[in-house]
Amino acid sequence: MTIPSDYTFKICVFGDSGVGKTSLILRYLTDQFNKNIGKSMGVDIRVKKFEFNDDMITLQIWDFVGEEKFRILFPTYARGSFGGIFMYDLSQRKSLNHIEEWINIFKKNNPQVPLLMVGGKLDLQEMRAVSVEEAISLSNSYELQEHIECSSKTGENIELIFNTIVHLILQNIGSI
Image (cartoon, rainbow, N blue to C red; front, side):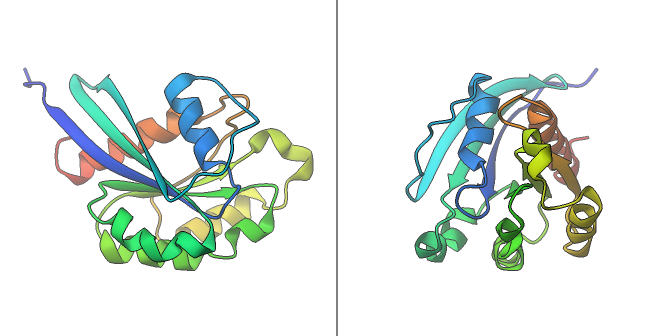
C-alpha cells in the first residue's frame, strides 16, 4: 500500500498572444467556454486541487501573456516550474513564429522539466493552417514530451492535457 502524498506544482502556459491560453485554462478549471475573454496582462495565476492516482495535487497554473512587450518578464515567471505548456493556434501558422524563443527561454530556466506542445482551436478544422504531421515534427525537433490538439470551445482533450502534464511531472520527480 502506498501512502498518499500532497504535491504542489507550478505549470507555465505560454505562447503568442491570442492562441487561446486563457480559454484553455478557464475551460479546464470551470468546464465552460467564454468567447469574450479579454487579453491577459502580465501573468494570471489560477489554482486547481484534485486527486490523481491517490495523491492530492495542487496545480498553480501560470497564464503568461503572449504580447512581445511582456516577454522580458517570462524568464522570471517561468523559473521554478515543474512543467510547461507551449500553446499555438492551429488556424494561425504565424502563432509558431516564436516557438524557438519561447522554448529556449523556458528550457534555460527549467532544463529538466516536462514540456508539452498544445495546438488550440481544433474546432476550426476548416481553417487549419498547421498539419498534425508538421506539428509533431516540430514538437520532436524541440524534444518536447507530447503534442496534443484541443478545443477549448468543445472541451476536446482539455483534461488529457493536464492529466498528461501531471503524469509526466510525477514521473520526472520519481513519484511514479
